[in-house]
Amino acid sequence: THPVEDGILEIDTFEKFLNQKIKVEGKLGNVDKKVVVTKTKTKITISSDIEFSKRYLKYLTKKYLKKHNLRDWLRVVANQKDSYELRYFQINNEEEEEEGDD
Image (cartoon, rainbow, N blue to C red):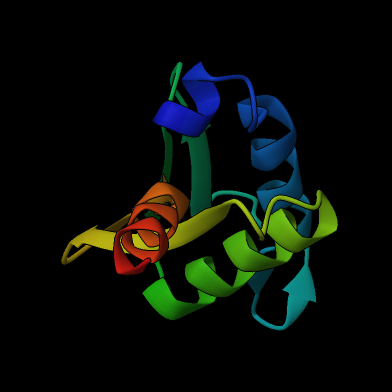
């Protein structure tokens, strides 16, 4: 939720990307009624009547981040058994540790 609130990730373009790239029965954009992508202010929810892999969603999310040059700043982390969230990399901690070694 933080990347959306900070204005780094645009939830509208991410939803559009998912609708275009999700494959159903081997066809791109075949989302129709079997897979439903909905959004709120800071979250995207995917509901599926067919089997839908959580790993496939992670793959598509990483592909979106790479396309928009956000892969260096954000990572995809499982926060629950059936969901993912985007988090910032912890860069500040590494810098503080390096300064403490001197």
